[in-house]
Amino acid sequence: MTGKPDTRMQNLPPEIQFYASQVAQLLHTYLQEDLSGVYLVGSAALGGFIPGRSDIDIQGVCARQLQREEKEQITALLAHPALPCPTRGCEFVLYRKEAVTTSAPDAGFEINLNSGPQMPLHVTYDPKEESPHWFLFDRAIAHEHGISIFGPPSHELFGAIPRAWLIDAVLASLRWHTDYDESGYSSILNACRGWCFAEENQLYSKAEAVEWARVRVGEHDLLQQALDLRAGTTVEKLDPKKVRQFLNKVRERIEQAQQGEQ
Image (cartoon, rainbow, N blue to C red):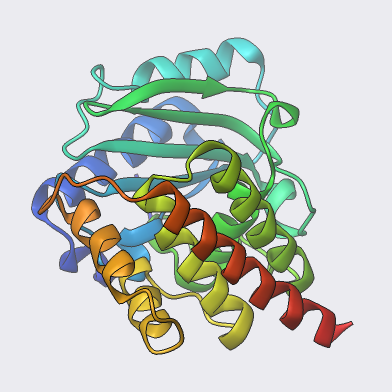
């Protein structure tokens, strides 16, 4: 397998480095010259990865559209426990190259696979079955911060995502968390990261975004509790009412910023 790994890989725990290399190796063995690149995104790329608690987010890029049988075979190779995941779980997405080099406001994947020791198995092969907001934000992270496991620097494969699309994706994420995860700590952390992006036009780690939000809102205890839940240092559940109020406040701030740009 050719391609020089990004030196930022060395900042990650050894078991994550090994796992990411295994994913790239299995993809290369199967796809051969059709594999264009493999990249770490999410907390591994932005900073703040917590071993055993954080997901590992990996995105692959292939040169052509895959047949259903090929997708199923790749899924069988990578899904936990066939390939044991050393942290909570892995969120793996494989894209066709032409779907990410030129940006489009859709999910656009070939394979969307979530699996791990603490993550329910979830597999989709049809982008229409998933909300695009998850994928747009992750592709933006890949464009700006992706760590190359195999292939060229991530910005050479992942095109820039227009800011207007990302703001829409942030608002869609807030609606999703309000409807389905209003007491989960990810709702708070994702809201802070989305709000920070809307105001600063920068993609920060969740922990950095919470620190940014602390000085702008009064819910210091709520923000700290969300961080503690993510780190596993508390099991006390968030108050759904307080979470809903916080999400509504953040949505209002983002909508104000969006209207100011129109």
